[in-house]
Image (tube, rainbow, N blue to C red; front, side, top):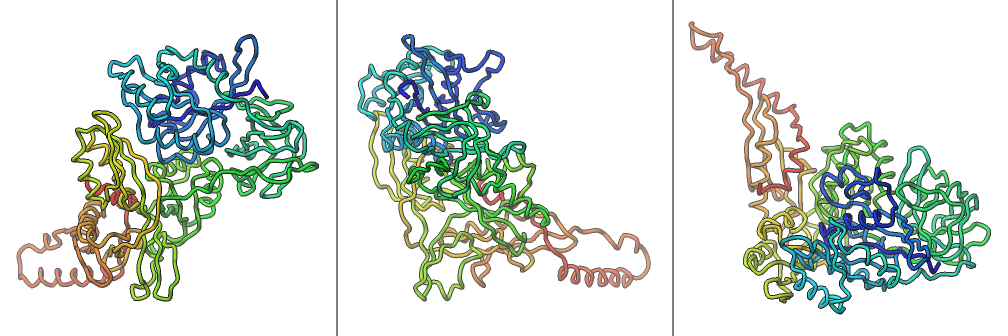
Length: 596
């Protein structure tokens, strides 16, 4: 055990975590020259396209230090706030962390957030200043920021360039020297924490775990503590670039187990693996339950694919434990699922991964957040969907979730960011200067206001310099109304939303204008209306497709033309009564981009 080191790399998005991981793998010769590529641990096409890490990736490296061989288990983590649950799970299975800060951008909001998470778990922090080779690097300034943040000396900050490999070698020595070996009892009953899992169509479910106490050998009978299910350890091994089978894994090791599990329901991230014959007395305290922030409906494009979608979401949840779903139905879209996400980027990534990895095309409704509705009978109902709202006469008041937001940016954008936050019903709670030209703003604001386009607007007004982090604090009473969108007099429940009273008129008008461009023209006029209860607050009309039917009636009496037009008028009237309006998928997502 004293020769094992478990550590993760944490940082703000795009500060060079995956590139640093590449250099560590090269120096320890964990990957061959043929296998080496940029961001080698980012194995999804989507990660390479977007240039972000979506999943945490664990890998084992061997390193010789002062003549002794050490096993280093590295976990590369995502940087975006929407994937913070991946980071928290990685931190729970490590004893140390490399805190990476970009020398040209300095300390950002997510850097601070991830640091607090690591400190809560008593991890040994090794500060790393990356990108020192860049022309815009401010080495002394950012070093001072790091020292102020974690209370270390400037000499303790490792200055590296992950791109060129400069200064990375001493970092491996520091990992061995400073990060403590895992603690545990090899003779105690087996206790192993499952921190991730993945579905393999040929081998069933592969669970990744870290052994806290005891030893696991191939072929032993094991059981999952919380579900009580028993299996045989068909194959166990270490997580190298490819799965590497081993006969035995000891205390402090990170590895995988394949036991032919086919049902996704049987494996829960945070569960404990133990022996059948000599079980442990209690499970390891897993991870706190994830709380989804944004909810959206997902429906199969064809109603007959409902069961296929259910099976797909089950398999997907194995690989993404922060994703939640439950069945629901919609008048317009039939049977589907109410899904919970950690943010809009998370929603976009899930939708794209379902299509790429499972060939599952889904219709996604307008995202919204969860509200607490208090009725006149004194009941409290959680409402995730505007269609689940009780009748207006039964509602006493509605409470919406509020967040505490941290924004770090340059002083040049102070006014623009203040205006943006005030427009989003934000309340300034505090501000302080980190350096002469960088400050941190703390705001209380409704979660529903930041769900759609807040992050995009923040990046626009700050020219990409502002960083943003938030956590939900409480529910507060709010003046909310249900805004319905009517197409030809029928409510399109997938487009309805709960919105603040002051913004309802403006929002309703924008949606009507947007839908007018997106809904294809029919043989009859389509009325698009925004309504609050029985009151219509905005209206647009999609004009009918017209054709000159009287072209053949040239010459002769005018009554010939009139007779033909009257006949057509009757047909249009009948068509309007029985015609249906199909809403394209682009219309659901267009609500998110109303300002573009």
